[in-house]
Amino acid sequence: MEVRPGGAFHYCHGFPDHPDVWVAGEYREVAPPERLSFACWFSDAEGGRVERPGFPARMEMEVKFEVLERGTRVRVRHAGLVEDQGEVQGWRESLDRLAELLAAHPTPNGEDR
Image 1 (cartoon, rainbow, N blue to C red):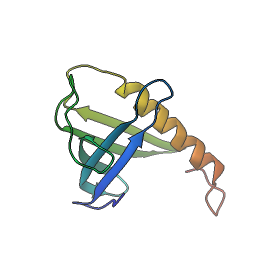
Image 2 (cartoon, rainbow, N blue to C red; image 1 turned 30 degrees about the horizontal axis):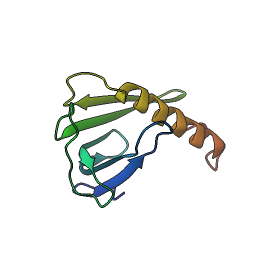
Image 3 (cartoon, rainbow, N blue to C red; image 1 turned 90 degrees about the vertical axis):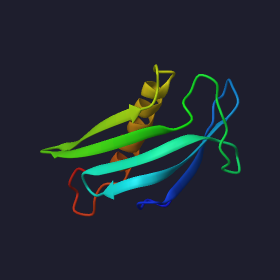
Image 4 (cartoon, rainbow, N blue to C red; image 1 turned 30 degrees about the vertical axis):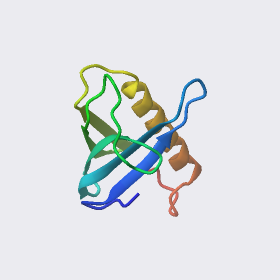
């Protein structure tokens, strides 16, 4: 992951009950600590674009972060889908894992992230 405007990413969703799904993309905007936006598409293991029936060729994501008194509110906009095909669950699981990771690694001064 090259988290910078124009930077690329490529990862694999592993599933116990069906084949892996590869995704590649490009960061469009990186504005810490408020916003991150990127485009993504389905790919093969080498990063080449592939079509997936029922899905758009390209999707746009925007993630906004809002610092609260205790914690951070994260808002995700996933554009380009006609209907939810598991993406809401995927985002929830990803954010839950992020929360677990941050809880396991407190900040040096002991404050919550």
